[in-house]
Length: 114
Length: 201
Image (tube, each protein chain N blue to C red):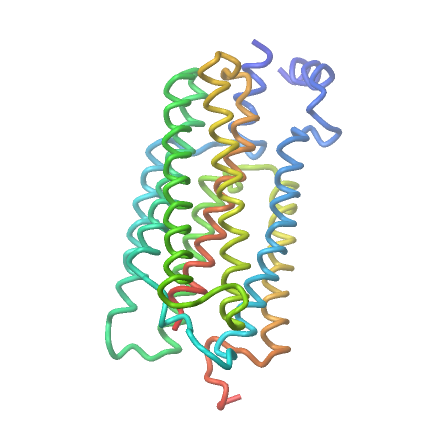
């Protein structure tokens, strides 16, 4: 009984509340739609490069946070667990930007502009 | 209620001073470090992007429809993983084992697609690890991701085997949840790789 109680508590996380199966399915549908839009935009002619790159990055970020927030339950979990992931994630993004800046590699603007 | 939880915490060796399960905390710390690992590999790929002095380049070899299919497989596997957890939480161990098996099969299919992709690159386009900067950075990044997925598939199959032998029940929720966290992580890494490596021109 105690173990079952513990299992349920862990499931719900320490922030209270938890996602339902319906929520999971809705998130999966959203992920599928965003992925379809991402791939489709590649085949649409006339989109400026900067807009295409920005749009793809934004859609990717939305998918990322949907999975982390709902499927990984971070939205409902304890702040310590959130900090354990978000802190290194910020460092990882900083590493990517720093390396790209060091090598003068930029996604949004062509190199001759910079 | 609080006393009950406190008593339980004293007896459960997995609950640390924070009141959180050590296994779950350890997994989140590992995933944080893995974020930086993949961040370095993605940064390196982007830094060298377009700087190869000889071909083939990304747009000579990429098969976007195949990669999109692979991305869909991993996204679907994330849904089946949470369905496994949801069933285990409701004491439906057999259903949970079935969803875990589906998750593992989707992951194995992803790895199979990657093997096919790598083989095609090597045999039809002459792109190998040492061919040019693109080959080196691409194979190291996606290869490490594929290795992560392969590890996840093995982990999931072990859990399926344990469940079928009756060695996992709802009390072992955290064991499966930790595997799920790892599995979702390989999914989010692929979300980043798919966009940054394959889709961005």
